[in-house]
Image 1 (cartoon, rainbow, N blue to C red):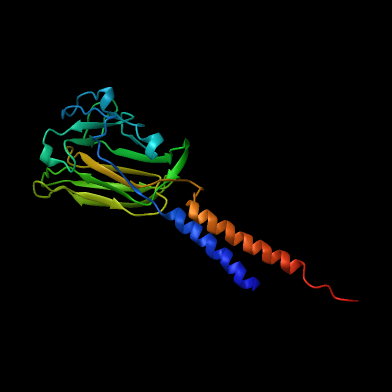
Image 2: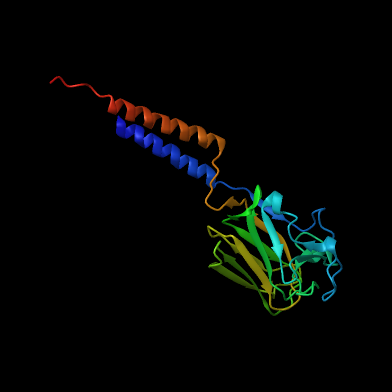
Length: 233
């Protein structure tokens, strides 16, 4: 009986972990009203309204940066050539100008306490739909210590109306870096699973109930075992 009760507690704990692992998918299309796209003019200074950095930090737990300290949201000018028209995301130069050759970094933090690192297990981003016939785009994922978890590349040579797809499904992703070699690729539809603070797993309410019930059964069994029958001397 005791062994069965211990198993019940273990099942409850396992269900708690399973519930905590369930995640919803977030999608940033760069059409959000907190952003004001700039014109598609490489080298031009990125206006404040088009600077993408911490706008999604306290809501979704992700921040963006590039060489200028921010990425740039750009009106691509061709509504049928972006996955969700018309805006795309571009990198920036150290001087704060639009630079499609610059690497864009997205890092994840706890939206409830943005000083705490967070991780996700799924990131996906799309390239624009105007293939140049040459060049590649690359997505690299890093853990909280800066170690490389994985990388994937795709060619920028799709027919007009199609574009490259970059996706990584790896546990423990704290940040990703993505860029293209052609110097003209913009990115769109940044997708990621809900983040979890490093070292913290928040179970679903139903999982809490199961966990508490399981631990209660385990505790009762321990008390009964300790209070076993007395033996006469």
